[in-house]
Length: 442
Picture 1 (tube, rainbow, N blue to C red):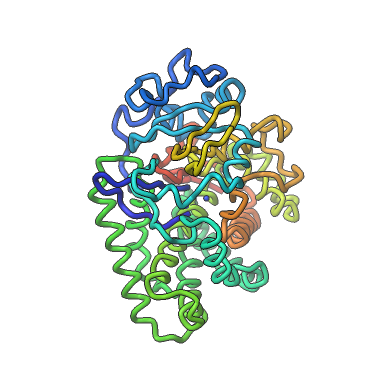
Picture 2 (cartoon, rainbow, N blue to C red; picture 1 turned 30 degrees about the vertical axis):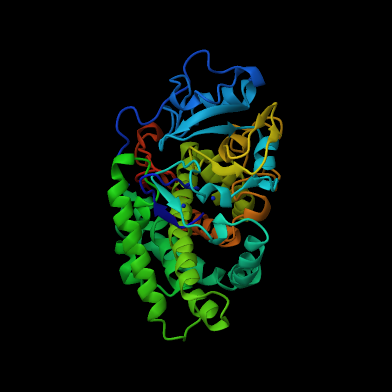
């Protein structure tokens, strides 16, 4: 995910999800397709010129978002209208695709651009928008060059060398929660601090500053337009913080920023942008996934009990939970660089397309029993980390953190259960979503 910047008046960009203090959306900030809007589109049914002002264009996120189960609208769209027009909370009207093959096309076809999402006049999906010219907002060949410079620091071999340390951190955090006695908040006790400690260590960011940058990064995912000024201030503060960190780097240590600076791979401004990308996406996404995974398993305790009994199943279970749980109620944005036929319509040059990864991951054309959690499902086809040139750079790091969080929890808390009914869990109304808190007992 790109490091966000606040949207300026008259300037458009995009937020992308790949990461509780943000206020609730005000009434009317989310909408649902009205009866009659779900139908097979044809070229003649698309009102391009009037779409921005047409009240029948549904707003995304839909009104049934931010809960355990996806809004039924997603399944109806996927089956009856696999490409449709939606309005984002920023007011942009874009295409939304929901079928697996179409989502893969948008994420892999070079005619759908990431650089175009930060061009002047481009559509945007959230209050903040990414920095242009960075790894998540460039296209090949510039994207290929940038990725080649930094991909080594996230290689599987290097991340695996950190696994034992990550496992130790996860164990300490669960032990601390258990020592406090039930009930506990697993989100606050494990899901948040684990990825924060990991990303601080990797970037050379003082862990004592975690509360400062957590506030800034949480605002990066705001879906409340009224928070634009706060988002602007938070992003400016985070940029300044990282600029000071890069400028004051003594050039010693084994953290990522020190290594990239020593190699001369990235200049100071590029290091700041790269650091923002990692700091924002590197803990928010994984924190939400850890909590959502545990909540999903405990919703049907037999799933939890199976992982307790079969710990070797955890890596496969993580892949299934990546497929099944939703990290975003929106999708990843691309902009067409030329007219492109897609799902029976022609997407015109300059139009935005949202690739709904969560909907694609439940496409019955690809996944048997897509709405069920099948812990031993054959892994390998989900799109949780994207696909194509912008496949998540930190995917293996996230996998290790998720695996070790579940391993520590199932080992130390084999009788873990939700402390409240699953239906009572509250969900964060932000671009990268998850539970507000996760009350558990044991």
